[in-house]
Image 1: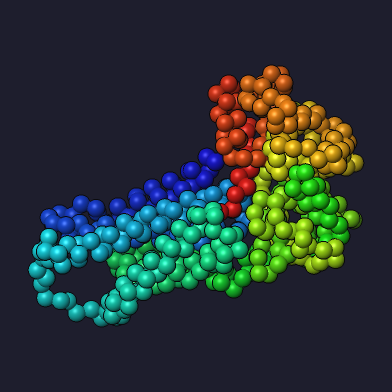
Image 2 (image 1 turned 180 degrees about the horizontal axis):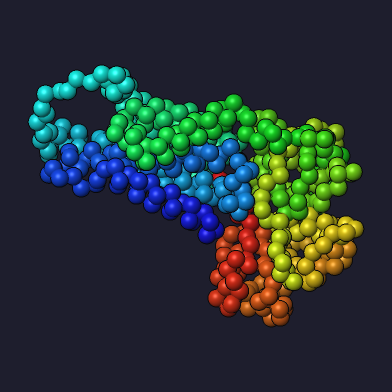
Length: 444
């Protein structure tokens, strides 16, 4: 999480510093209108920078994963940048419109303007486009507000979110035109302008990729459903696919985007199997958590063709700690199943000692039998904790059950609040912060 915190605030502070080299928020001339010019430019530069980086992250650039600790963290940064851009764009809009409203309402008097200068060349052309850029930018801002707010409402259906969120690329392209025309022309000859130009170009290319439906095109394969196994007590479904040659393999703990219906679009699922290039089979375990996953067992059929994009994620159990502690709560057990299958393969190497804690609300005999068999084959110590039967897992209880916890790396996948509570407890008792790894499997 530290990386995305630094990325967010680093972008904000870096752009602020570059902007202050080119302009000031406190002009020498008195009056609200003199101050308004600076604040409009400043808020506009920051809002478009955040939106541009968010647009780049939307195309799932693999080269950034290692720097931001996985696509799940990148999407969290994408969300923060979208919220930050929304707030700054609102500030920009209020500065641009507020002073005009104050004049119309008789609260302020507009300062007298001198003779209008004549502009030629590029500056003259840009000034001629200003009315169009202002009008289009205003409507694009209203559209972006609606689309970002919809994305933040979790009750808004995922299939509709996927379609409406794509329209942000259109709003962004309109705002690029708005920015290019209305940015103070002196900025383009200074570092703040150079950085803004790079971000606008990168964001524009990314927006085109989104609109053409080319996200992850180079990492897309196809597969055929070979088997479907339901675990009714857990409301889970295990789906096994046979993949074509385009799938280059994956590491345990990674996830992929699966498309079984063009109308529904791609959904992310953690991979629940190790990779064997001779076998070319891959499994996913999904839980009925919404309209889509709740009806998968009714809609999927053996023999169906599906599209798979990936793999993504850095929840891959790396590190040289001699001991690992895994916590897979509920459906969060999935990456650990894949890792156990990997460790059971001939020649696979891992830590000397692994303790797997699996808090669950219910038990399905068939699923439990599989989990226990995977743990035995991998040499993993399994601790099953059933709600209502066993004591709740806390940091204190974990420390009692695993005496060497301070020398271990901890890998958590499950409800975010549960993970944060365990992290806070363990790090307060001496676990290094970078030894706690948490999957943020929430893509909106």
